[in-house]
Length: 381
Image (cartoon, rainbow, N blue to C red; front, side, top):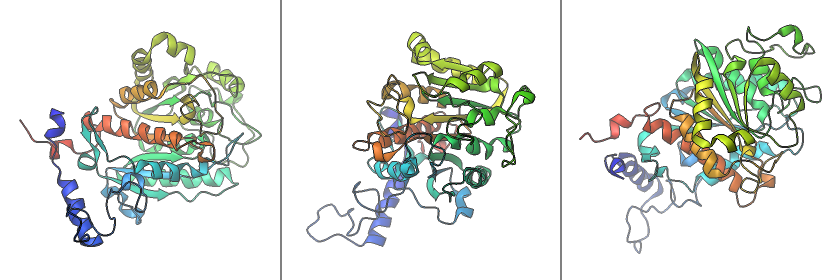
């Protein structure tokens, strides 16, 4: 509370002025003269044209570098192996994000004041063509990252893990660690003869010198790349793995390559803080940056039903969000939240949890000085 009192309210005042200028003054019967005739700001939450958190829409993507962070929708679900629908994930997260104003009492952070964020819109993916969509995604993510904006990537299915990281890793001078929340290990080489959402971490780690490429997949005549050189398997940490589906081939690869898999049974034994500490230690060892991949199905489907491949026995929201905050303290080079499938959601619960993952990660990094401009808006003692 004390920390929040020190933060200026300049952006709030500017939003009111802008709303009155662009939306006209309210009817004479309205006592609160900060209210405009047409909604042009955050309020009411149920009105307006939705961007993420009602942030400015960066229509001219060449100007995305004017912002410190950018929400990027990746509406691609051709990589799903069971229930499609995640192409509608970005819009669902945008819609429910309107309920949040970015002011967190327990986090002690005011995102609108402390972080310049925009909505960069959606990447133009090619439905039915995985490899062309991957090329579009990697090029778009690369543009956002090299422009200087922190990429917030919202899918879409988990096959996007590979092209998302491929858009960032080549620009980092050193190794990239990956912390991956999921109920499924997603390390198969192929699934139904394609790079589906069960395969991203196989390909991300496939180009590293520690991998025996003679044993890796060779049936890639339709692919023009086979992995990334600076994403070592030893820096890949997968948390929440378990259940009864989708891990057979991936576990074999994880054992071969020496990745770190923290199952739900491991998590139950270690607890939240110990699990996060271990993940950070392993992911950051000899690495220059860490990327966070959060599959919403890592949260138990009792809380997050809107996903393509639900698996009971996952995290509670409180457990998941606490680990996201602990991991984000050290800073991230990018964040993805995937597998939100609105056709199966109830009351937007799953989309809201995805939104919270993003907000908790961003808020933590602002507090820790890893992103944003807190020093500029915080009154000094």
